[in-house]
View 1 (spheres, helix red, strand yellow):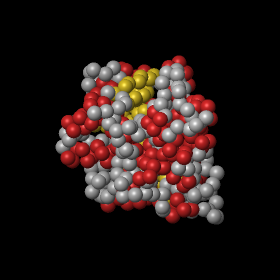
View 2: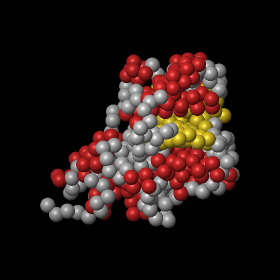
View 3: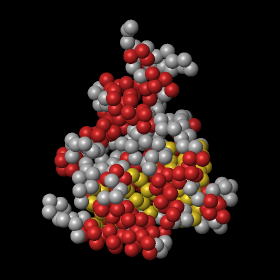
View 4: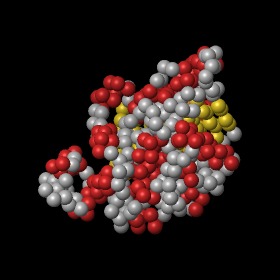
Length: 414
């Protein structure tokens, strides 16, 4: 059978794609522009067929039922589809929406405990979560419900996770790679405008002056770029209805498309997440523009200057010593510090990418997770003697471990 050019790829209710017989039956439910981009990436040897299939599987995890969420996590859940015209951006942005440069609604998942429904209007903090997945994997449930259960035990809070668009998924009208950041920004702005307002059954209990943005891995990079866009639009006056954010947590953030730091060179290969894996994610997201001057700070926030991060809220950054993102996280910390942002950073000895969830019972993982909880407690004004006592116990054991062949924890603060 003769092969068609990428421009001829099309899908109908019954797919007629000439690639179907030898290509990927699972793609029949995806848009023409997205399928074309996947094809071009594979043709140009920037992504492998096996990776394509595995990421598709990761992107199509079934949504858990309400019964499962309640039984496993003790949480209730609501979902919202956020229309683009609800954005707090400027009129020019709304024109782009009408012209369908950005064509999709954004989804958010709201998780909460029953007691949240009894709280007074506008009293509960909100943690806005952005999942990881190397920019082309994961769902809004990836790592979210487990976190929400733990946080709900410690804080009386509302938890929101955003279903941002994954790469490769550029629209036909635009070649920008900023769609995920735009999705996160619009979702955050939409949530902000509804916290403490009577019209939403759940968000009305939230306090818009206490929003903490929390991102892990690729979500950490998106958290940084979302907050950067938030601060920029406030400075420029195009989003004058938005107030200050209360905090930012960047957990092993994926920030730099260039992947050219010493830690990327050192961890290019291995059994865990490597620099080659990171490059694949950036290739899927940016294509040929990757590592060029045509990448914006809202695609790769490591390219930001101290002027770009003015106005950031108090920030917590962490990363392991044994992972490719180590140096770019430290560089971003330095950028924030230079801009006089209240920023704290921990670099965990021996930590590979995602060690704190992959091996949660290891001493370094326990100390890492307790340190994050203590930062959140301090920021939210929560007194938790149990966390403090457990932290002291684990810290003592961590400090007493054999030091031979290992480095010490590196902690930095403003």
